[in-house]
Image (tube, rainbow, N blue to C red; front, side, top):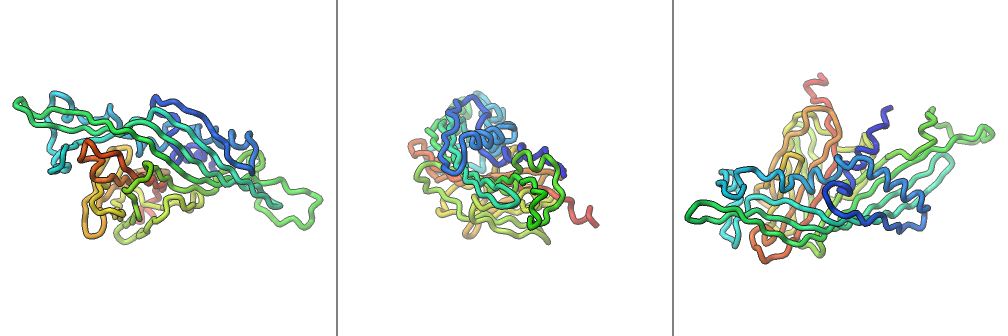
Length: 326
């Protein structure tokens, strides 16, 4: 069994803790059930692969990825029409910059005759700015402006680790366990993980559910971003290179709702009692993730309104398409 991707995937669904230029305030231990050494061990594991952090959805794209057509002195491409509004400002792009980060880790240890289990809850505090690129019409054409709003987000996710015990040769009543390698006894292994929720203080923009549908296949609804999935087999299984329909319900139907991935932002269309869109899963078989972000209407369309956001990051994995299996 391959185990080398464990650390990388934990970072994929964990906090965006080391990317960017922000200050890291370190780990604040809060758990009575574990030693400070245990907490540092889990913190180090989370930090192993910063390139695979939630920044791939929550923080990316960034300012450097703004299309040239939105640049100062340049025109605005036709895609800006999707943002058209009668509000105070006309946004064409948004991005986040995180300057300060701190983390709390809560670890609870349970033990039985065959294994030790660690339940890990992580809370991240993120400080920075939510940045909106807007355009104004002038005699010389369209000119870009940047509106910055203070950001103080809180992110949460959960994970479960297990470390198996060596059976005692003198314990005749010990339960039969599958043959394990020395590596199973020497370190922690990820056995379950949740998605991730990141939200602003007292947010009114709130995601209620995310429904994922594949024609002739998957049809599932996620109502709790912090619910645990068994790792890796219990994660959402999506055929590679397949169109996935997404329907998002929010508390306020006037919210602006976006589908986020490493390729950028896609605004979902309001339809009925939800917001609808689609994405295509990766071509290769691997772990991946996507995010859904609900923003209060004033966050984008009123330069005086505060930043108000709710983000869910969802882990998944691609599997062989049915036609390939056949």
